[in-house]
Structure formats: C-alpha cells, structure tokens
Image 1 (cartoon, rainbow, N blue to C red):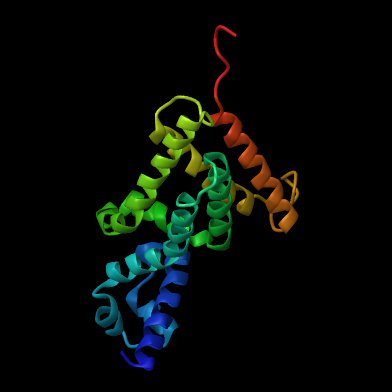
Image 2: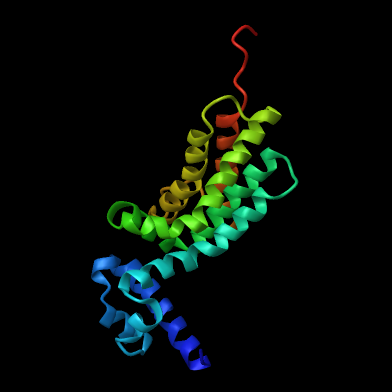
Length: 207
C-alpha cells in the first residue's frame, strides 16, 4: 500500500470515528464519512469491505490500546489488589480520553450484536484474564467468596459508569470538577476504595 493509501485509510477512520459518535451508525452515511475525509465514496469498500467493516475497524482501533494495557496489567507480578487498582485506573483514564468508545460499544450491544463475534478475538483474552485475576485474588484472601464473573461485571461497570456520569453532569453539581487532574483523581480514589471494600472478605459470622 502506498503512503497515499495509508493516508486515505487513516483519514476515513478518523472521519468515521467522529461521525459514528455524532450521528450513530445509521446516521453516519458513507457519503458523509468520505466527504469529511476528502476521499472517494468507493474507498470505504476498497479499504474496509463495507460500512459495517469500517464501523468494526473504528471500534477495534479505539479498543486496542486499552486491551493491550489490560493484558499488561493482568500479566504483572504484583498482588491481585494492586492489579485491580491499576485496572480501574487504566479503564477509567482510557474511557475519559476516548468517550466515544462507550457509546460505540453500547450501540453494538443493543443494535449490532452480530458484530460481537468479530471482537471476540480481542475481548476473550481480556475476559479470561479478568476472571483469572479475580480467582487469584480470592485465593490470596483479598476478595471474598462469590461468583468471579459477577465480580468482573461489577468491577468493569464502575469506571464506565463514573466516566459517563462525571463527564456529562453539569458543572457545580458534583463534589469535584472531573475536568481537572485533581478532580479525576478524586473520583478514581473513591472508585478504588468502593470496589476494594465491596470485594473485601466478609467478616466471619461467628466472630
């Protein structure tokens, strides 16, 4: 592929990411995407096969850095507790810097579930690793007994929810401004403390 080809492909991805986030899958037409990218309408089929192929490529491009970071954390040699803290921080910061990811993933879950198998190759190692992390932390005594999958679901929902709520709440309604480094750290600290206490070993009933 020529440099011009790489440039055209990158321009289409950038334009598609913007329009899919602004208009949703149905609202973002191929003509509008290629128009914003300064490319020929036929270039979407040439580089991505179809509009759905382009959509999937956009989602995977956003997700890839987070997936790599999560796998690095999961493979780390630190304790389960420290890896959980690092995981929460990584997911929250990635979603804050890429707010369109949550929106695109929700659209896939609700309206384009047939695309999920295409993401499985990237997502399955993450899901497997998260389950293993929870199980290891349970064996260490860091996490109380319970179904690991439910803990993983609760764990991952925290940074997603906090990112969505803090980012979209009007100024002055929250205890700290999330648009500052201090504010983001405030919510991260609360989230980590909340999750750690929620997953902690329950007191013995006969104590």
